[in-house]
Amino acid sequence: MKFNPAHAIFDGNMFVQLRGLLESITPPANLHVLDMSIGEPQQPPAALLLDSVSRHNDQWQFYPKATGSPRFTAAIEGYIARRWPEAAGLADASQIIPVPGTREPLHLLGHLVTASKPNAAALVTNPFYHAWRAGALAIGGETIWLNSGANQNFLPDLHAVASADLDRASILYLCSPTNPQGSVMDMDYLVDVVRLARKHDFLLVMDECYADIWRHSPPTGLMQAAALVARQDGIAGDADPLANLVVLNSLSKRSGAAGLRAGFMVGDRQVVAQYLKLVGNGGSLVPTPLLAVAADLYDDEAHVAAIRAYYDANFALVEKHLGIASPQGGFFLWLKVDDDIEFVKRLMAEQAVKAVPGSFMGLETEDGNPGAGYVRLALVHNAERTDEALSRVAKIYKSQQ
Image (cartoon, rainbow, N blue to C red; front, side, top):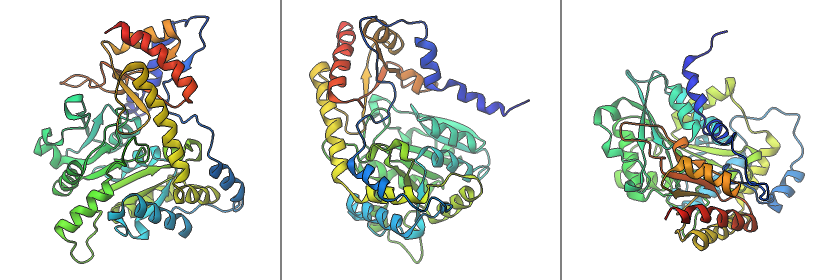
């Protein structure tokens, strides 16, 4: 049987590469393996989550609705109003829909713009989350990789992209706070990219799954930038203040509920309408009882503050063991090293710690691989395990200084 040859690109999945790198390495027998390679929340579920699941344990007999429920929509409207007050009311109810986490919609949004432009291109941040690459592949054109290095605060330099490439772009994938570096896009950056998306008529997809995992102050969001542009430019008639924009948010990180598979999409009303057609014919929907759980979680901020405190404690240990300042957001440490491949091999061989080489998260371009020379460590375990893991990491890290 023959398969789509374009899908061979998925053979380079970073975890497949990591297994291959470490399969011949035997860690020290006197140390238990500490896995810091996977960004999966490890803290116990919030009491609110457990209570909500037990309370909303009916309506399993009904098919879920792609548009969600009035209760869910109201919860998202309330969340937006609290999280980005300037954007309160910017989207009407038809522009807010539930999604089963962010991975599937990140991919499917690429299908919405397939063949929408001649000689089409997808603009994708490099290093990348695998779903962005899948969405880029779906447009059926070229993928233009936007390297994000330390010289640009780990953000893509959009003004380095040729105007002709922006014109043929169908979609742009961005993430703030960034994965894996934890950098945050400020208002000027976000306003600039909103204007670029409209000037060159491409779909801007903003992955904000780490929007509520921050250190000192809440990161600016794309909804705030859209609200500012609307105030500056004015909105004529029935013009959409979210034109060309989609924001994706999930409870996986915000509420430590990766298994719930629930979040929301808000954005351009035409894009949302087309997306509903797509998922209505072949997509996944959030079950109605779990939609009620998601509404409860989006209505509450206390459990999110507790989750942030959990990660803050872990990043305090980074400063203790490695003397490195914490990133602005997220729960990854993007550690600068001499050689990321050798560092990860030594970590397992000498200290029984599993991490991801940064070069496995990026692709080689004419300007190099922006992930090379970095190691990603997921600080998702409790403080005791994180303290032990970082003390082991420090032994390898300090030996290269």
